[in-house]
Image 1 (spheres, rainbow, N blue to C red):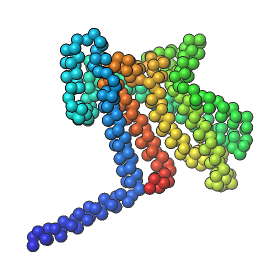
Image 2 (spheres, rainbow, N blue to C red; image 1 turned 30 degrees about the horizontal axis):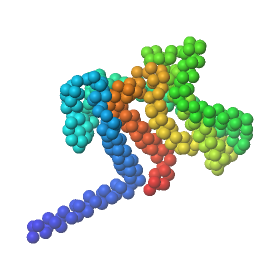
Image 3 (cartoon, rainbow, N blue to C red; image 1 turned 90 degrees about the horizontal axis):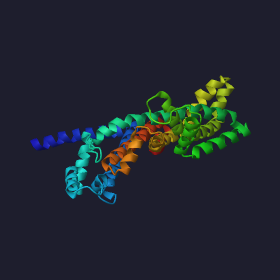
Length: 340
């Protein structure tokens, strides 16, 4: 009798919990957050597994490669044992995951320093370069794209459109490291106006940031121009003009926010490419960041450092894409409806 009564009381409590969960999931922002979180966790799991597998998929012995062919066999074996490379693969993976959660990324094979310390020392320089490049690209692309959209709307300004399109295509297709080499030759070697290596002074940022920003700014400006030309023909913009609102209000207050959806999506992808592009730019300008470190680590076969830096770059790109998805949902809630 007591058991039956408790079962009857527990059933409504369970139903209430299920009802609360169903009620929460019926809200579109909750569903959006759950989807994005699941996608982020799944992508992180793939990234971590790929970074772990990298050291095992590369042919040869990484310890022998790092210590050199003349290193004694006893020293190589002792280093493999200390790094846990003689353990079963599943055990190495488990220790690798434990290390990630505790901030232990291993020890550098060549520098004999904790990898987390090396990453923490070089990461700020790379993030500064990537963020400055992205800010400059957006600061140039938005006003340029809006201005060209206004000038070339309804087929006007054919010559301006041709010049803008041709220039932006050329600049957008040139690799950023080639732009960096050109800037070094012109402003560093020929004119001797700006330093071409290091980050000790403020003017040392000019050339590497410009090399990173030129291509993305050209691509982003083209997208914004096309979106502006389309939006300026929309009914709500015509209504705003009919009300004789100031041109600044029509273009910046009504047209620009509706033209930024596609640009914001592309901006997220460009931010990821900017972070990856720092690898080559840092080597062109001797920038003391992760990009320069990963190249030297690959050459010296210091795979724990390479693993950690690949992980940092991957996580940065995933977080940037997630932030862009959230910003898109805030600006245009219809994107959530489409996914539903």
